[in-house]
Image: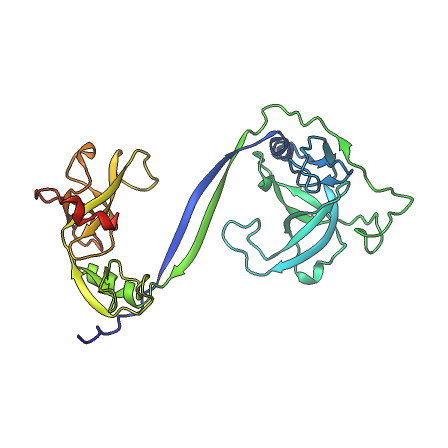
Length: 334
């Protein structure tokens, strides 16, 4: 059998995004609540070092540390990198520098953005201060950015040299960490934007779906048919070129009941998502089961695809009305 002609190279922008919700312990709660109140808190380790941002356990001894201190809102750039093309969600829309700033009274550096007119205006050792956000909610974004600070209380290498005697280095001051209405938790959005190019085998699979057909590829060695195709057999490690149309009907091999409604997904809960072994395939794909009460879905249920007008893939699978498949016919696909 002659190999199928090479499909058009496909690509599409994709976004993976989810909100990560976490609760805060007493140290992180004090740090973020402090930012809301325009105060920067750190912790003092057993060895006397002031760590900013604060951590809950000593990085050297692994002992729990709770000795909160307040440090200054001015500091010194210890290193930097210029960002000429800011991306979505970064602190500033205009070009800026990423900087590590050792705040006065701290022994470690804090990463944030520095608003500067250009890379020539940034240098290691320069003095900077916090520019606070107008609206603060108890998040690292309460620091809008750093900005250059005219005062130079230190010598040319302030993060290594001794301070001038006439202007002693600020010291970290003890702090109780107590605030009214402390921040107890945060939601940190995680997002990945990228362009996906599926490759030869998946492109053929996608092209076939446009004609409401499901096509896999057969391994020339073990003769298994993989759906969706991968371009190579994961068992034998050889390329696959022979296309095989499978289905359209198939068998539910296993399933789960979804009880939490997904954002931007117009499906009422509860509903069932299942692995479905299409007839002629040696790998189960997944799909939603409809046309049957969720509590009547079962392993071995025979189903068929339901296409919507203009749909690029089956909207869901529904029962065919056939008798359930015998367990031995799909047990190897669980």
